[in-house]
Each structure stands twice: as C-alpha cells, then as structure tokens.
Amino acid sequence: MFAMTLPMTRLAVGDVSAPQLPPAFVTAGRAAVAGLLSLLYLWAVRAPRPARRHAPALLVSGLGTVVGFPLCLAMALREVEAMHAAVVSGTIPLATALVAAWSLRQRPSAGFWACALAGFSIVLAFAAWQGGGRLVAADAWLLGAVLSTAFGYVAGARVSTEMPAAHVIGWILVCSLPFTVPAALWLWPADAAPVRPSAWLGFAYVSVFSMWLGFFAWYRGLALGGVVRVSQVQLLQPFLALLFAVPVLGEPLDGLAVVCALAVIAIVFVSRRMPVQGRAGR
Image (tube, rainbow, N blue to C red):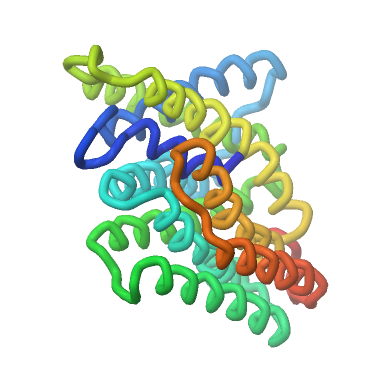
C-alpha cells in the first residue's frame, strides 16, 4: 500500500509541465478524508481516548506522517519522477532505525547495522545511477520526507505498544481534523475542471490506503517486531514503487532495478535474524 503512494501522488499532483492538484491540497485533503474515516471507525469500535501521557508522541507522529511526509513528497514529485523519488525514499528504513536506536534506546548488533548499511548503499548506488551521479533541488524535499517519516513512525510505534495500532493512527488523524478539514476546503482548487480523473483517483488512493489502511498494518508490525528491525522491511518499498510506476505512470523499468530489488530482499531476510537488544517497540 505504501509503495503505491509515490506513483499515486505523482498522478494527483502532476508535474511542472502539466500540474494537477496543488500539493498543499493533497496533503490536507488526504488527511481530512482519512480523519473522517477514522472518526467513524473509532466511534464504531468504541475506542477509548488516548491517555494524556500519549499526547506528545501522537503530536510528533502527526507532524511527521500527516503533515511532513505528504507535503514534502508532493512538492518533490512536482519536480522529479516517481522512480527518482522511490530510490531516494529507500533511505527511510535506515533513518527510522537511527531514530529508533537513539530515542528508544535499542542497541542493534553489528551484523544488523552491516545489513542496514548494505541496503542503504545499494539504494544510493541505484539512485546515483538513475540520476547521473547528481542531486536535484527536489532531493531536499525528499530528505524532509524521509526525516519526517522516521520520527513519525517511531513516535507512533511507541504509542502502539500500549494502544491498538488502528486506534493510534485513528486518533492522530481525528485530532488533526480541526486543522486538516478547514485547510482542505481553503486549498480546494479554484478551477477543478482541468484536473484529470486520474489525478482524483490518485488523491483517493493516498487518502484511503496510504493515509489510513496502510498504517493499521504498519504500526501493528512495528509494535510486534520492534521498530529497529521491522523498519528494514521498508527497504523493499522503493523497488515495489518502481514496479508500480511502470503500469500507473508509464515510466520505463530497466533490468538494474530488478537486480537491486532481489539484492535488497536478500538483505532484509538476513537483517531480520540479527539480534537487537532492548524492549521491542520501546
């Protein structure tokens, strides 16, 4: 679900030559739609309100996953193709592991870090190959998206050890509604007629799947397996995004991407068997 976020966001915002929905609207709108769905869900299951002690972590998670990542990604995808964004986003697992090790006081083994760095190196090498060895201005937005995601994931995972994962993302989105709904209405395109149906399809996908349903499974996985170890599964995301970008956006795929994907899958398989000291998810 998360791997489809990149090509679907690209569909929603378009590019500089053919812009579609404004990035700020996509950011606020997807959070507003997901927040309304979460409100219905939390009401249906009679979910208890989070404790006051959870407020700081929920705030950090919201700033990272509801605001920072979607906005930075949408801004970047106006300038670069989904495949470029996909390879840069491959640094998310390592960034998440670094933030988790620092804030959750976990101590990964040397073998784990070797696997993480190997995966990171493959991603960087692939990005350099695709980008001709240079960075573009949009890479700064992508870096912001990576850091926002890392801090947001770790903060949300901390709360998900004490609350059901579905409740965590639900309350984050519901608490954001007083800001996201007015912002979405204010940022609604003044002239929506030229917006392609495919752009609205991309917006619908990132609202329901990327912003809502995907987090149910993700936070549950982080809580069960530990943030540092489980975060490395996201090394697969950039290469899945590459594959999805072919049918969704018509972007070409070369054999190097397939080779790198297989290599990363092998590294993730090995890294999950490396010891990580400390309480899982805490």
